[in-house]
Image (cartoon, rainbow, N blue to C red; front, side):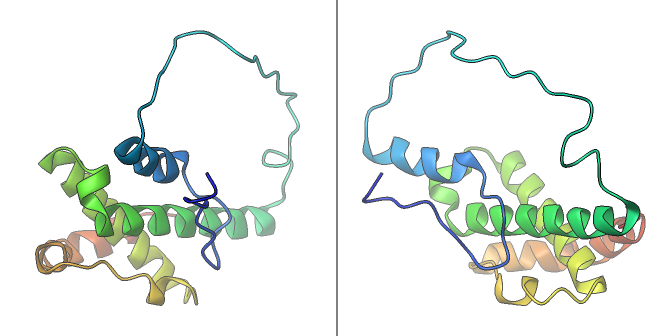
Length: 140
């Protein structure tokens, strides 16, 4: 874990567990077991369900920002994370829609998160118009 620190990008509050664990799976042997270790009980009122409308919009934008960064990271390291072409296309599509939503909200973080690779950028260009249409349907 010391050799592979958890990424902490600016503007992102949640990095998916898959980012670190897939990376570690390529370097080390892993053993998994199917046993329940802990059971969580949640009350009805938690920090997410107890927020007002202005906080909810800010929370939704943060969720989209987190998702876009995760998808950008996966696409830029697709040899580790993406196993099938359909997974790749879904990840590109999510990235494009999230980017359009953040662009429409003039988010300051998304502009520095660029996908690498000629093919990925071509796919983003092909999905540009559908991403705009889908992004407009979100009430964020």
